[in-house]
Image (cartoon, rainbow, N blue to C red; front, top):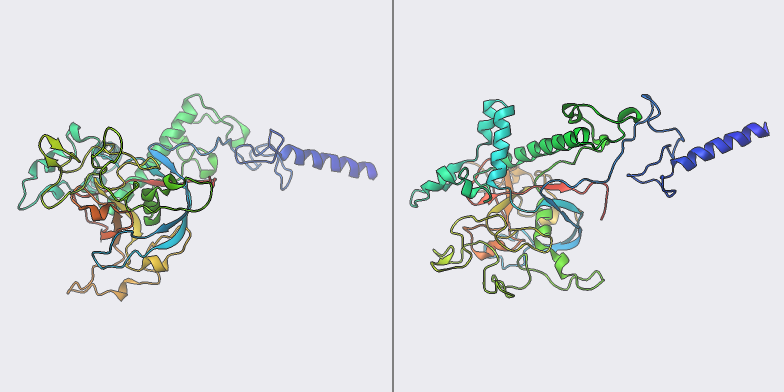
Amino acid sequence: MKLIKYVSAVVVGGALLASCGKGGGYPTSTDPGDYSSATGIEYNEDETAFQVNDYEDFPQAPGLVFIEGGRTTLGSMEEDIAMTRDNIERTVTVASFYMDETEVANIHWLEYLHYLKRDSIPEVYVAALPDTTVWSRQLSFNDPYVTYYLRYPGFRFFPVVGVSWLQANDYCTWRTAKVNENLAKEATTGGKKRRGLFGRNRTEEATEATALSIESGYVLPNYRLPTEAEWEYAAQALIGTQYNEDENQNNRRLYPWDGHQLRNPHGKKMGQFLANFKRGRGDYAGVAGSLNDGAMITDYIYAYPPNDFGLYNMAGNVNEWVQDVYRPLSFQDVEDLNPFRRDGYQDEAENYDTSEGFHSLISNEVRVFKGGSWKDVAYWLSPGTRRFMAQDSSTATIGFRCAMINAGSNR
């Protein structure tokens, strides 16, 4: 009897040791070991066993840069000239996430339309077309942009406009599926064989691989619109003000760069504007021979210096849609960890008069946009300012960029 107990102890102990990572330490996501540290049962032994696929940490998603989260003070640093009092300062924590380096450009949207036209019914393609008539004005000759802005090659890397919040969300859904399809194809046909289902090398066709579950390790999290808090936090980029190894932030920023000036104070580009915005009444770019911000309308998505997170045009060029439903008092309702308003919870639309008299435009179908545009004065370049518009509407001054959760890490 003693011998049986001893042998059992040795077997169980061996299994638990085998459950440790191959490097001899504690198991991790990328090195879970061969046996469960909870049951001692071998992973991937056969078709009935629990399947633990190889995982090489969070793969870099195309177009995104890492935004390290942390504590910050959100809210407007500008004088509240509109007297809305809808973004009072408050301290929150935003978790780390990823965000597009630039605004989504015309070439990206044309790629989207290409695949929709090939793979979807005509109605889906038509619904995804931007409203190019947003350039048309009754008392202004912007007619050429109606025809050329989206499709002319010279505008390829200018931000897409005329896109509603709903269309932007549809793009995020498509982009997620397309990126994951491509990653799975590379992994299964590009010589990157990894231990897969039932403990063997996965060599299924790429079309099969695209249907794999989250547990497979192939699938990236969803591309999506950033929350208002994420967008504002990323625009502030206060990581650039952390000069000391402590938790004090001694500087706030009025804009996504240091100081209160709108011109570059340093180097060879001293005196040049740091964003594309409307400089004054009737003044969009300066005078011929000495154009400064250089853009009468939108501009190249990399045209101005990035902020300290490496994000371009977080002020000016185009405003950007965010996820949040608009409410004037969201700052006092939302939680202080990853704040977000998804609907009218605690501030229902019935509280606002949206009857025929249009005493209020606030409903659950209006969304926040931020950042200022080529047609806005400098006030709207401040990350804390906020406006809203119906989610099915679009203009020549609003575009967007995508974000993604930082899965499996707090770095």
